[in-house]
Image 1 (cartoon, rainbow, N blue to C red):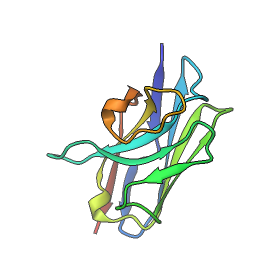
Image 2: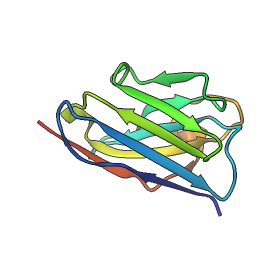
Image 3: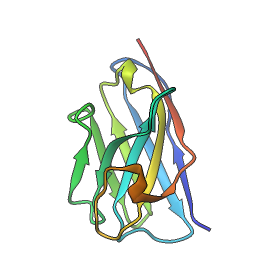
Image 4: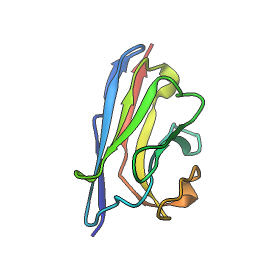
Length: 125
């Protein structure tokens, strides 16, 4: 049974940092891009960042570019999201996900097949 478990969320003041982790179990995803999405109350789930299967290519939502960094450790079947200079508008539930397609990077939730349960990130002003 495939499971993705996020951790590292919490409450932080504006300008602070958090590091999210997402550990996958049940199968290996070393050939699949992995991404982070977030969903704020009353809003649709939005793309945050994606990393290629090899970790050599990354892409970010413009709103987080320069502040967030996605990385992965295929030996640990884990993906990370380092979030710096956090803003109140970053407040949301953050989800990690595995691409539906090998080697192909996607930006829409429909392009992802496995999802974690989410971790709450709250940034106070």
